Length: 142
Image 1 (cartoon, rainbow, N blue to C red):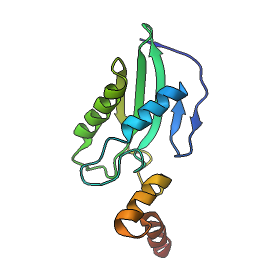
Image 2: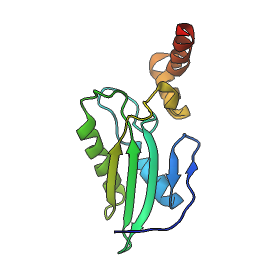
Image 3: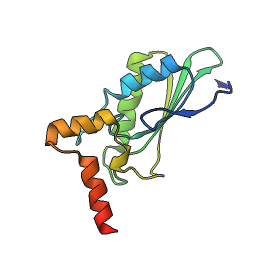
Image 4: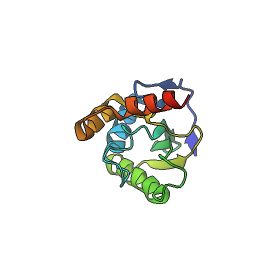
């Protein structure tokens, strides 16, 4: 059972809603940056797949981490394994944590969710800003 502590949610600089202890949130983000979609060479955090990070405590004082994330497409075949990789990465950093991973497709992911760091990674790989290209393509479609 969780100990409910009223804390104000905020949206961080990467457009992720965060609630809870800042040091725990930072550790979780570090862990998420070690998880990759097998088909995309950018980690899931900088790819913009993480919508929310909640860090609370259980009644016995252990950390309880809840992640709300999405995938790049509804039919993504790695839905199960990716959630498991997220849990494992967080537990590697916070061994006694209870970890809960929920996946949603509302709102759907778009390249606009990619962080500044993620955009730089893609620029280094492909030589152009894929987000700008995506935005331009959608403007042309009207």
